[in-house]
Amino acid sequence: MSKVILHDLHSQDQLQVIIDSYEGGIYQAFLCEDGTENLIWLDQDKPLKTRSLIEMRDQLDPLRPASMYLRQQSAYDEMVGLPARAADNTLMVPIFPDHLPPTADTRTQPPTP
Image (cartoon, rainbow, N blue to C red; front, side, top):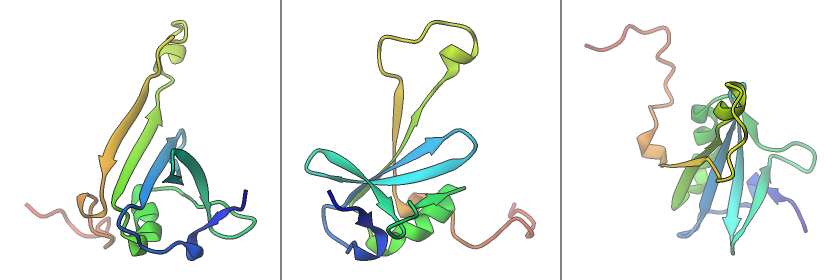
């Protein structure tokens, strides 16, 4: 199977993306097609990986995906010494580019009242 390279993707009406959230503030994107998920790569050697959802949104925004989900699996049970759950504890949250904050860096600006 060939790799899904970001610059080879084009905007489509049915483009679906899942962004996995990993411990340490790392995000990776997967393209969903025909019931399969494929990691999106920047080039042949480097997967698309960011340290924030804003960075990921900036990378994916030109594609204008029809749907985008944030996926996270919690390790809470294991962290507090409970046995692993038999059921899946995956959290899937629908997100879209217009639901995320603007790309302008507001860290140096005072908050608006």
